[in-house]
Image (tube, rainbow, N blue to C red; front, top):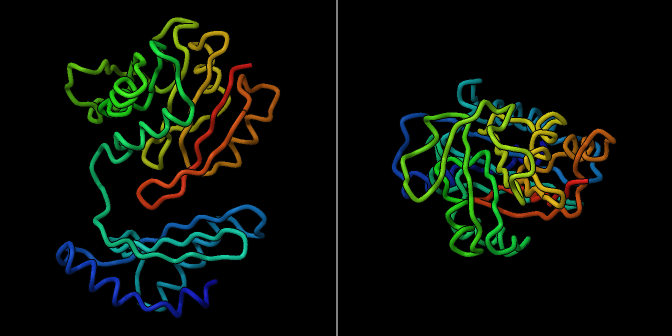
Length: 250
């Protein structure tokens, strides 16, 4: 794999990126790796090797490993897909926001019932809740851990919490939706799972969107976990392959 990447000529992609977006102020190439099941190496191990390969091939130092050019490599079974992102990378404080169409698709997949009350503890500005409310006719409450990531919007109910204890009564919600992206800074460990389960009703469920997370799946198999995974689906958002978990309270 390293030999293959070393032989890839990034110059055409860089040139086309500059034409579409203008020449950036900084230089460098960022790498995103995704490794499927059944391989003897992890995404982080592959990332480390490929960063070394690109550093030697293009004479990049450590400060030039974060972009603005973006190389994406995905390995599934016996195939390796190598892509070069031509659009600008989103760097705003609400980079974890999902589009209305993505939120609607998620609602269609798991079909929350009409007038159910759902909680989004990582709501950014509340875009997902508004989309689900419009398409699926549910009621939504949004929370966020950083005030700078919320925005004034009278159509959504957005509050703050500490990332550990939800300011909600037990059994309040029918469901919890959480997008735990790389920028969220939160980890869905047993304690946070228990907090989500506390505010859910008897038959509550949680929809979790994140990168494929085997440690999360290991937690879900633990006797301490208040959830069981009833379904996992792959979903591609903005060129990133993510996993959508449907969890049910036990």
